[in-house]
Length: 111
Image (cartoon, rainbow, N blue to C red; front, side, top):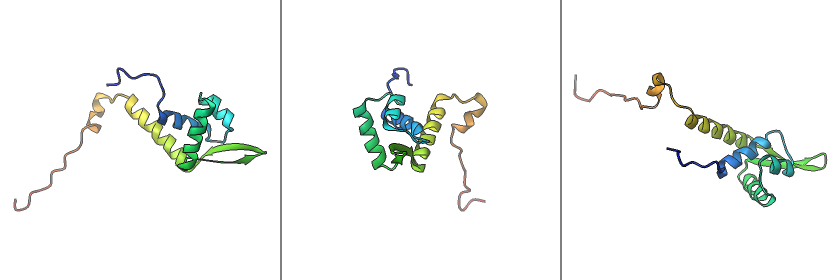
């Protein structure tokens, strides 16, 4: 299914990466280097993340630092879980988890 999948990062993976870097607080340049982004790209992502409430910023020791919010940490966790879900192959005994359960309700007027 993902045979032609390239190694190029998509926007969601970049966002998740930034949020991981900002988990305990980081300066812009730290995020830029750790997330492997240009200054222009970083500013676009920072603006988006601030506008959506996934990160917040304030000064610590006179330097601007960015922190992932609770919403941002939830996003990063959910993204990680989704990646894990599509990366792992179910074991043969676990295939029932992939098939929806049928719930049969008794028909009215019978029995």
